[in-house]
Length: 96
Image 1: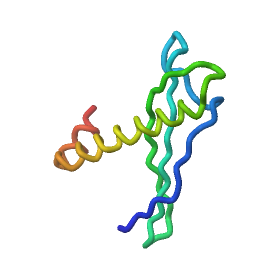
Image 2: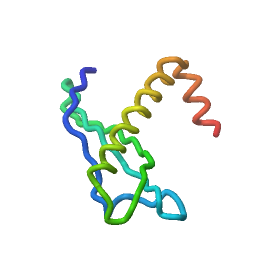
Image 3: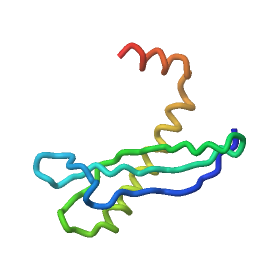
Image 4: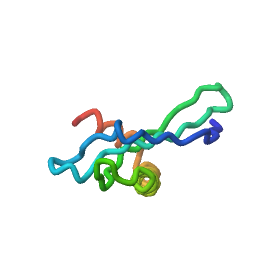
């Protein structure tokens, strides 16, 4: 399959989900949208990362931090998938 990157979506501040009781961290969903050139379908990879949060704070900085963390986490996930047997990963997911 040949995937082509299409776009990156970040939520507005109102859609950031509190990640701690103190309100200093928020979950940000970073959506990476692709297009499958063979089927025309558009799959999405969502990476949810915590970022420092302050209500009314600098949303651009929160978005920048989220994209950097999403990149790091996506690379870690890709490495993990490459280094492990897919069947073993599926059995582990199904058992727990």
